[in-house]
Length: 116
Image 1: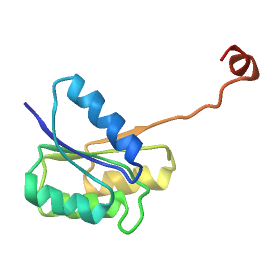
Image 2 (image 1 turned 45 degrees about the vertical axis):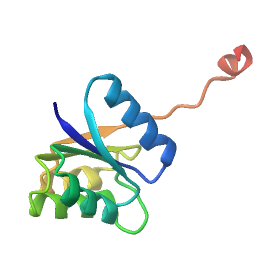
Image 3 (image 1 turned 180 degrees about the vertical axis):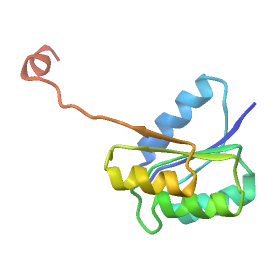
Image 4 (image 1 turned 60 degrees about the vertical axis):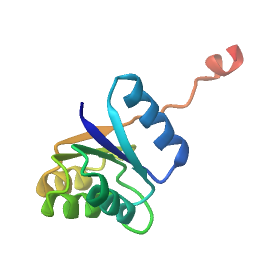
């Protein structure tokens, strides 16, 4: 079973991602709230994969992923973010990110809001 570390500065997002992975029978070995904690937990738990947000305080996901990849602390990092900026994607490619998932948020239409 794949061992996964979930990293996001938003607790509810970490919880949601972890629950989705657990329901799909993945082994979530830990969670982290920033890049520094992600590196520390990678050293501690040796996850197979890291799913990490790009924009976080203290140390962002790109910088943390670079360290994780350079130190070979995981088999791969997947970035999960709401940002589809080309510079993030290009930087991710340079540091060896294995996946970049862009979440698109849309606000409900007025018609949908009246149905609630």
